Length: 465
Image (cartoon, rainbow, N blue to C red; front, top):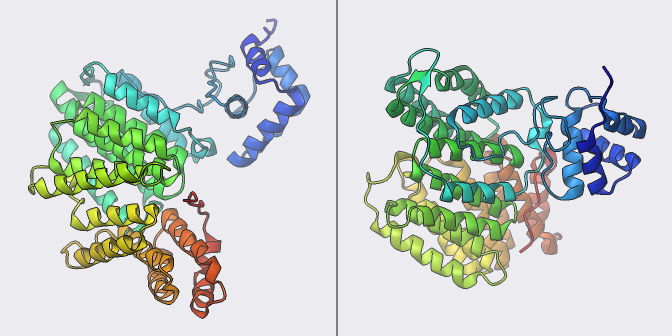
């Protein structure tokens, strides 16, 4: 059979304005990042345009290289190569059909378990804002029901919720990378078969809600491990699952989590929009504790915008007033972690970013004092690492370098025990702030003790403020 030219690929290559040699080079660069041994020549580009099908993951590499050149997402279908490999856009869409969502989740988890490097590549924040619009404007969800596989009951749903709590605890104590592989295995072996099982709509809603919580936890694990594109794929799965469960509170909390990550990555305007979308969807219906957490995320984003100080302070005031209104037990269990120490921690971060070191110090001190008096003091070990580094940062910004180094040295062992790239990133940011004091004896000692952590892990640089 005569091979047909791939007109769609030729058209996108023409739109990108790149030569065959240039495209081959770009594909090679993506392959290097994804750690796959693909190094095409310009003649291979010509053969693919003539109709030859690329092998293995190469089609995904082509799509990614063209996406980067054009500054927009190019799908396998756009370049006439659909069905040739796992799509690089897997998990990046807000799904309206339960069966399609289940299939997408299964493909995503399988590819993740196989360590497909393209899943960890950058995902533009636009994919999240588009999903947020889909969430806000979506029609009532199609109710999930299943008619294949074994019958699923509420005991299965409760088992997922208990397992989610276990993995969340491990994540909080030991970092996102600690138990992520085990969480993926549970998704593959236990959750996906249940989603493909037999259940009525009422059980289906509860099942999808429980799986949304689990996917949200897996997203946080990937985020904490520094795999931000992968985290965004799981956040979007959690959002779609919450939609089909008709769980608007959980879906809004997913948007809030997306905002948290966007702020961390320096995408402040988008983070602000996501936090406000979470609040807007539940206006007048959210428990006070949820309103407090959503407002705190708005404040975190606004604190980093050039003209955001006023908006930040207003959002912090909203968060404080909402927190004071809450009554224990009125909120979902998954937001109960947001206590007085967490609220103070959010204040400390905001005032750090606003440049008010004294108030940041006061709030960080309050956070740690309340946390240490709490019965659950050891349950959020990673969060308190962040709080201590913010406390040390406030001291550096006030010129008390010696005390800042003392705090930082004391927290180093916990960072070394925690499989968290975020902890390393916080530590690196603190170290960078000490550069003007690099000849201070305490800084020299801290630098030497911190060297194995700073050099041994891959951390991002926090955006300059």
